[in-house]
Image (cartoon, rainbow, N blue to C red; front, side, top):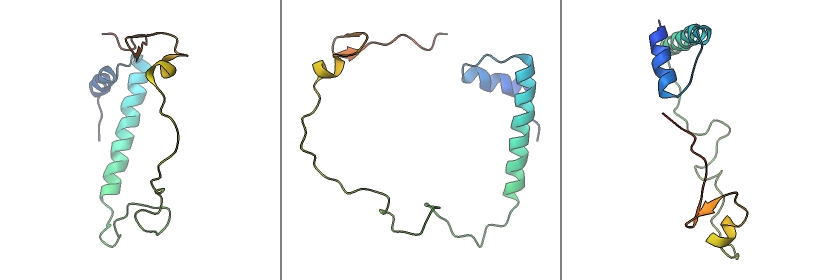
Length: 101
């Protein structure tokens, strides 16, 4: 299956990535390989395979969950939570803007 350079550029834009032309070419090839592999997997007969949610061992659905327990501890208040923050205000952490368009 083909994955065009334009497809890669569109996905990169959605992910806010700046790719070089060489990276676009490589990603187009790699993404096409992934889709080709998925097509190969879809041809396998899985009718005899039982559906599963946990692949590590057979156990009840709740085997990996801990039991709920009330802990005797004081909740952290807003002032205490913000005490070591680099910048805060109005009861919130302040962080620099990460995404700019």
